[in-house]
Amino acid sequence: MEIKLITTDNTAQRLKTDSKLLLRDLKLDLLLDIISDGDEELRKISSKQLMMPATQKTELLKRHSVLKDAIKHSELFYEIYHWACQALDKIQTYEDSTKLKYNYIIPVPKKILTQVETALAALTYLENISGRLRNENNFTAEMLLSFCREYTAYYTDNFLKEVQAFLHSLSVLKKTDAVSVGAHFGKGLKMSDMSLLRILDNENSSEEKKGLLSFVLKSDKYHEIKIENTTIENEVREIIDASLTWILKTISDFNYTVKHLLEQLKFQFGFYCGALNLYKFLTERGIKICFPEFSENSKVLKVSELSDLFLVITDHSAVANSISYEGVSNYIITGVNQGGKTTFLRSFGTAQLLAQSGYFTPARQYVCNIYQSIFTHFPEEEDSGLKHGLLEQELLKLHDIINRITPDSLLLLNETFATTTDYDAAYLAKELLNGIGDSGITCLFVTHNYEFSHSLYSKKHSENVFLRADREEAGERSFRLTEGEPLKTGHALDLYQEVMK
Image 1 (cartoon, rainbow, N blue to C red):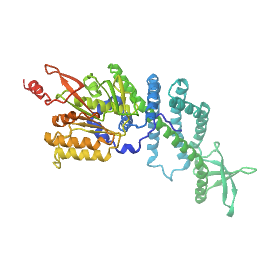
Image 2: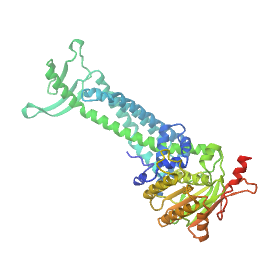
Image 3: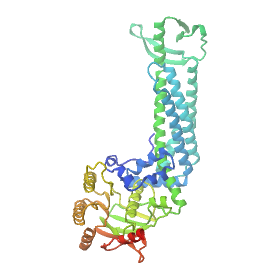
Image 4: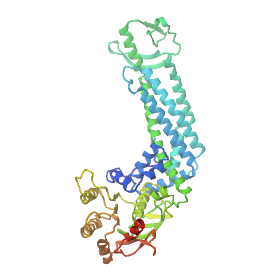
């Protein structure tokens, strides 16, 4: 049984986006703390999906529909996730307890008993999930309804009871390993077509006959053969093990299937539980959220009241920004120091990752394209090994991005080339934008380089838009971006006065 509440459509893409840089540059660790709510398994699940954005609109819309149901039935999603985790923990405990000594020396009956314990532990949780889905299945998402129908149709009450009864019947192996088998004599009087008839539960082995085996052949009359020869006893042991092997294989296969199912439940319901944790956190703080809309026709970025989640988490509030553009490839962001430029860049990158994970976004409205990959280029500390200077580090990192980035991707540049002179930086920035301009890549570029930004502004190309972080008359920052011509000054003197006064 395959659960399809989440399907991956971008296996090749996973090798392109640099997860470590996204985590660092967009400061996503704090966001993952909220999503996981202290659950390390949930953190792993959410981090994996957040760092590997989906690229198919149909898949993202499917996740949206499931998440909307999850918000309405949050208790159910939490319960299924926790039951799956608990079941897997118990299974792992049984596996760990036998891992070192589970080899060919252990008799098959004992291996069966171990598998029985594992199966019984899992069945309890499968039964809980089945009953829960029968009591609460008024969902609207087709994939969720399909999962409920398939799960409850397969794990019926009768099926679960039959499996439990079969497993409990094998507990007789704790007392005896005597079996009744049927076979034909083949060539050389060797046994062939051997089959297990039953496990004998009425054996009366006494202490003085410990180690003796009772082997019963089915015929018109039963004849009990007492074996005291060690060689023959070993051969009989092989016959008993061979007759029970199919039971061991059947239970082992069942456990493998159930474990795979539980892992799917843990991962997929855990993904939505992470979204529920974030939903609770944001709604409690009055942050506006919406499900993003995806445009496939042209380059679109329409954002209304977008909040930066890093500031929401650390400062409990954030100034929201709104922009609306179509047909724009390059967003050049300039303005005052400490005016919110990097904050906006980070808020947009985070929101886009959430959008392409199938989550909601922290905005009143969010209309965007689906990008094939997402890359960031933020300032780094100087190489501690002194192998490369700051500019060389920047260029090496850009070289790596250029080798991996694909058309229709998103590139977030923050103060790139700030480690060299204005003249050289302007030249390098123009070369970079010219190079990626024909690839359909969308670029958001935060810069203080007036020569670069103003030269682009003077050309009035329609694919470029210029956003500016402004200040009030008294020097206060509004932390909002508006469209405007780049200015020569970043008003660094405001900061000088504030610090030095």
